[in-house]
Image (cartoon, rainbow, N blue to C red; front, side, top):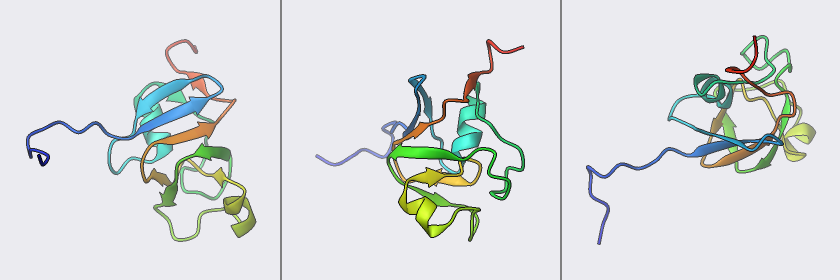
Length: 107
């Protein structure tokens, strides 16, 4: 049986560790944008992949970038580092972002 066109398909999920928070990853939103939309504040500044304030480890899943050359070296990419401000998920993603805050509990 095939998938019906009107069936709701859930978007991929971003899990933020060590907090264990899960947020949906709507199509076209970066990891940072999806987190902010869900009330999670990740460290950030430039939002264009150059300042590296949002640098964190991608624990599982894969991403691609909305800019041709994000501020990561080939070695950093190979080691699992990512820039959530310009990273688009290819499916479910888990990041290690110990500096993330729940925006609803932060003044």
